Amino acid sequence: MTVLSYPEPVTVPARQARAVTLRAGQSVRITDVAGGQVGDVFAYNADDLSEHHSAAHTRTHTARLFPALGESFVTNRRRPILTYTADTSPGVHDMLIAACDPERYAAYGDPGHANCADNLRRAVTELGYAAPLFVPQPINVFMRIPVADDQTLSWLEAATAPGDSIDFRAEMDCLIVVSACPQDHNPINGARPTPLALTILPASSEENRR
Ligand SMILES: [Zn+2]
Image (cartoon, rainbow, N blue to C red; front, side, top):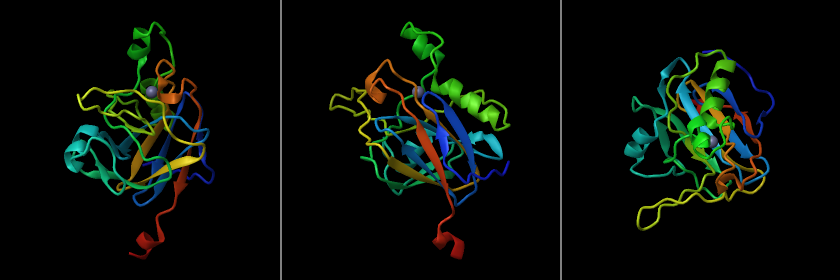
């Protein structure tokens, strides 16, 4: 994989995405800079983009609808790729909803709107990889999609405060793409898309001693 270093946090501008690479054992912190912003997170095996985080396989692995602190996310080959290790946000994250895409906004009558699917493709190619043909269902950090008793879903405004963050540890060398979701046709971003920030954390001292 391409080895990159990130001495400073990487800003994900509002409505855009950025990709970073992580070595196994490193972590990425995703910070909601202004609060109330959803991030679409995609994770790939850095050496083979045909292997990627799969929400369906992760729900099978964890027997839960939504991410829980301490649990791992697995790939379409059922191997752990990320672990959810820390969280200063209210702890509500979605793993049911597809990334927004050109068709989603065309249906709103707003063709050409920025979207997470195009953001993913652009961010991956900017890092020198071929654009993925398939857009996996993301981990939607800070996104509130409660399931009601009658099993209907609601799209609620993200409850994060400025500076809230979530950490993921890489369980393999991986390519992580985070899109600051540009959705402004429903309430998830408070109709006001804002930036996110990515901070690469070194492997923990406990892991360095192994
Ligand atoms: Zn989106």
